[in-house]
Image 1 (cartoon, rainbow, N blue to C red):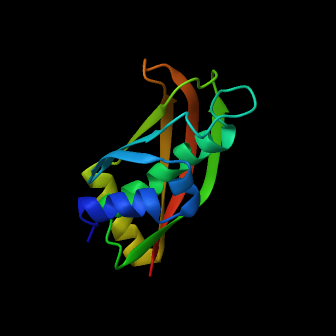
Image 2 (image 1 turned 135 degrees about the horizontal axis):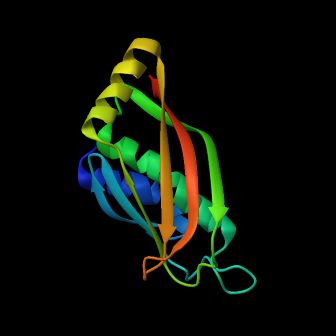
Image 3 (image 1 turned 30 degrees about the vertical axis):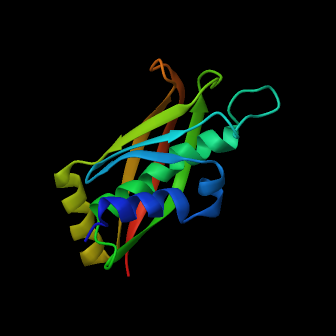
Length: 147
């Protein structure tokens, strides 16, 4: 079963020390949908915009956040196979990202992982500032694996 919302929030925000240090926040955690935010404060680079590593982390974490809200954590675990990030403009404020998986895609992934021991799923995401401007685009490939 997917984790209850509060456990999913703790897993997303506090399980990995690096994510906790960057103060990433899970604003919405629902089956098939997550919205995460990274603050500029504490994640600045040498010119005062958001550090590329913080943007990369914000682009990578949604795959794990969707795992904790959407998949049976007693039967499966996720890994990251690949993440590509394209920077579009400097991130001068807090940045958010939204990720979705349909119920049918969640079901497909779980059935395939149960049958084959693993199943891939991809997320193409946009990292946006408060005005909705895209500061970076990502494509990530994850894999759900059977325990």
